[in-house]
Length: 171
Picture 1 (cartoon, rainbow, N blue to C red):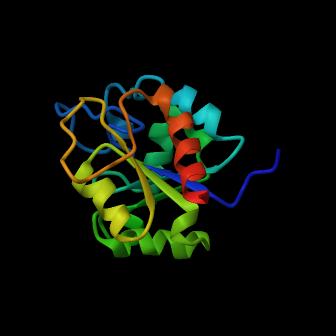
Picture 2 (cartoon, rainbow, N blue to C red):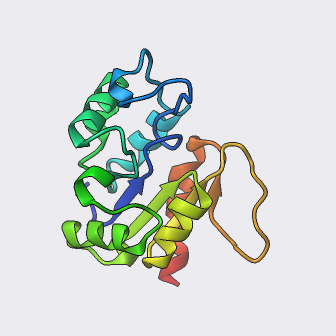
């Protein structure tokens, strides 16, 4: 099956890879790196259908170091692109961060879903730029009233939620 033009962008820390607060510096140099539970299942389900990329505010890692950390976790083959603060010079939640990525990919906002764990930074920022979003709410934080949001608490739910989101938008 040929991939669609649609993209799914993931935040990196605590959405794809676990952040260990006790470690500092570039993640690739940490004593351990660890994928989020079941992220491989989600990525494997999505990869045949969509282009996958990372969109991160990481300040301690450049693009090459991010790729190397993904390689340590055996996740590098799932992603086509990495967009980071050090390359873009922009940070989430600024809509300009997401607009720069859209321009680079040559896509419109309705062709991208952003998946992230930080409601204010990943989700609201992407929504301001016109992207669809899915909140990875692993810790089951309360959902703010009046802000209906597609949510997953386990990455095994992600492929279904992506499908539901784009099906709903066709109506």
